[in-house]
Length: 605
Image (cartoon, rainbow, N blue to C red):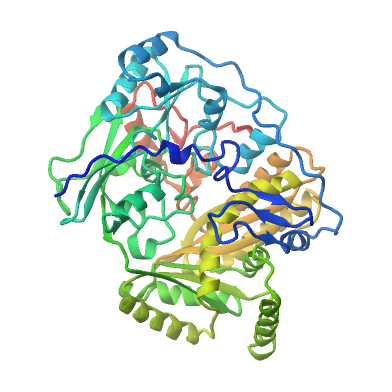
């Protein structure tokens, strides 16, 4: 085993993030003098380029007239706050007995605000466009630098009766960081960014010990310098952390090759109200010594412990990374192809395989820069070929984007199977460039939601998983339910609802929706949007889908939890919570503590 020097903490990486919207401060959408959209910076495939088609596409997709878009709303950030609740005894003791320097504790307004929200549309709207006072946010933020400091913080919280909420990257879309409105104690946000080291790398056994505050992108960079990778790549990899992945039971875009987070983690170190929960005495591939209670930390959402580190499996850094794209004549045909690929041998599967429906494909096309004259001619020829030779209808055509990460020989073998299988479903090869654009668009499109909110367009994503036999019916019925909810509220335009298959398993798939609504002149637009999203979630459960595949429950989906798990599971989890945290020190309020809980959720932050 080679023991490496600790990596510098990644606070500077995260400090480049925007505090009131998604993403980095150097990347944002804006409208230029010609009235076209641009995205600044140089991080993404569309950065620094003009996107002339997006506004026209949005008006068409939402059923709006050419002159419908309103004047953009200015941001009201930072919002007004309620007075902080301060426990002077805790503040005095933590600064004297635990923290090493004054920068490890902050009561600054914008720091507190940032630690009290995730990335749902309700939270972003409340921060930027609501005139109401923001609901409860953490009263103090602390930045521990080691396990001993975390344990002393928890001890002091118990002795002084304060509430603690762990904070990783703040990327959740479940309102998991919203502070309970009824919490009377001082609330401490425990930010893990100073605990972001790679403690050691074992090159022989392909293992690494990484602290919980390490950001995904930084993890991959540092491991890559040693010839390895973790392979976990969620859409939020630029900001989300290892501890957050474990706490939400996350999944990444390259699951086919590397697995979900529970497949990658060998052991977890955490701090509970009862003490430090260390790594197991022996690090072995597998054992049979009874049930492992540490599995309860996966998906615990900050309710039972602060995760401080994990031992993870490594893979050799792939020598080649390449993309591909396939077109199919309908979503149903694309689903058949995806199922066939999911049930093929794992040795010939790509690292990532995603299917987007026609609505999302058209959005992707609208986010392309204007091509030159030669490019325009090429586009017209391609369109004519699809329409008149292959008989594809543009309104029904779907795309599958693929990512391959292996040796060149292995990739060629995988591509042969992919193309052979696609021909069975009359798929067309669209090329490497289209595949790369579709894959990388995931990162830049996240900025779009917060930008178009200024124009009264509200957008959000939500996901589920279901068996292959239910995919098409679930998609159809959710579309019908959203259209009905939109119609009965007499909202302007029409709803935009796109769908993609983002993960595949032998037994089923992850179905991921994007919902867009035009909400200008609608009273309480964020609340109305939340009602329609909840109706879509209700329909998903009626169709046999899961409550969540990887976003988690938080507070946004609490009201549905009793329909998704058994009363026995809820009761056992509640008993475990009471046993290891009798004082409810980890009082974030996520999930349910008993099967009889009654939840009163507001639409504030």
